[in-house]
Image 1: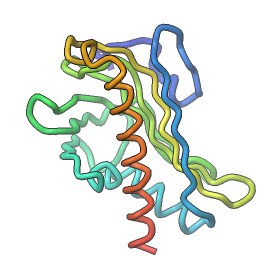
Image 2 (image 1 turned 90 degrees about the vertical axis):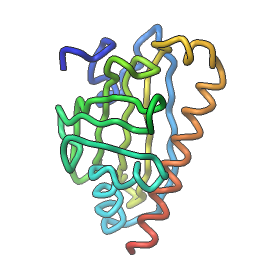
Image 3 (image 1 turned 180 degrees about the vertical axis):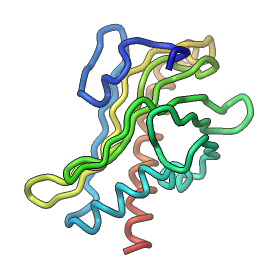
Image 4 (image 1 turned 30 degrees about the vertical axis):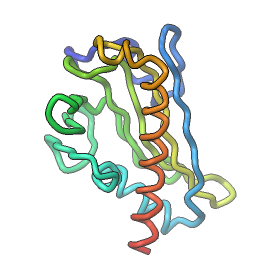
Length: 166
């Protein structure tokens, strides 16, 4: 993980909100039940949720595990990342990636599902980032809007996958 473009690494796993970064927290309900939680977690860990958004996703492994590299997007809009943590427990399943050189931003983003004590299943995107390249700096607030829109798109794709595969 020596070529990650930011520090601290792993903050999305612990909930750290480091200073000097923009922070994103998006959460949406998916439904309830352990079957839904298992399905949703599987879709997140296998990158199926990301692919269901219509994004092109190329990975060095079949599931999100630390060290797996991935690119999301096409051509000059593809962004290189590396999985820095993954988790699969009875209450939380997901992973976080860190940015690599060539990514428009510098930071970390996590995608996970949680199964709470009231049997509800939630999808969450948590990130901290700052512009790393000129196009992202010039995009300013539009980049933030785009990041929020992609989080919502992931949530809708996951909900659709879980409904189709129920």
